Length: 428
Image 1 (cartoon, helix red, strand yellow):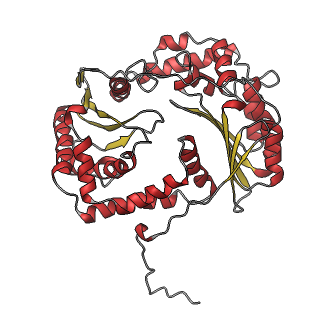
Image 2: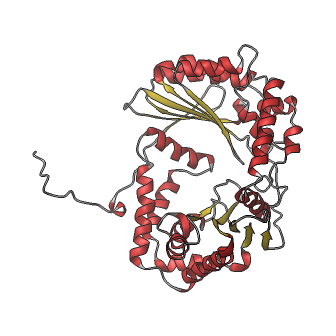
Image 3: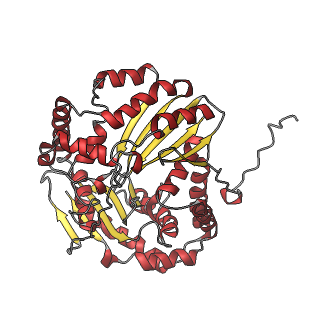
């Protein structure tokens, strides 16, 4: 068939597509670790993620979860930190450890043919990292220096305080660190956190890319043959939310500052609540992408800021709705007023169908991009599994994005855009 270059291709709306979430294989390693995998044959590379409930929620001492993740490659009984990193670089592998309020994730990305060279050392990190005191000292020094620099910035102060206002300082989602927390870190704290939470009993594994049955057997041989680290299920602590009673806050951080950091936030139900997914649509329309109401008004029309965004907090146990921006010191209060104005418009006026369709196409198009390749697809599955959802959640989300109406958007705005529920913070 000859391609007619004078004929423009047909352009389809993302709303016309039939969205399919490719299935994954679900197995259990010999020692009970849930193992999820998705194979493709595009490139001879793979990505293996080990996920632990080991974030801030599960630490018994401030700064321990972050330090454990940061120092997991600091040295074992057989390898120094230099030798560990040199080995990974020799095989072109990326081994990253990240942690947040809920999860700690170790992700290995490498050529499939080098998997057998990489995994034994990864297992050694999980079971034999020694956290040499010299490495801890360097980490503490660097963390304190980084903190001292960040504390000069109004946006850093604003981010710390707004979380505290919503959840309370004693809550994992609301607490933040001081230099004294780093000074108090002990090697024993890190060893305890590692062995208690980075264990086979507290692990889920996700594999994507090009691999064989033999590669899966290798993973089972290394990680699944025997229990490793603690075999007591970590207790799930309960943390009550203790929000600040005062809703309006103004902090003068630097008398000479010409810019202010604005944070406005309100509590919002967690992901399991039926309003969470519809709120993604309202949030996108309001301030969740470059064409949003807030960007059009406060950036494009008023010129108060270079950028303004709203978001739903992506945490497992509690959520919130937040607006963030930096603006000129002299227009901060005007910007706050305009944010409330846009909330009121969504409460009192129905969204135009054309504008709503643009937002639908944006969200659905983003999902299409997230279904391109096994690495992206396994990430979507990971999000579902870790939050206790099945693929039905994916399809119900698609149907909601396609079918939500202006009246439903207005009802959500009326329910959640209540000025009296918002914490209002300006740091200058």
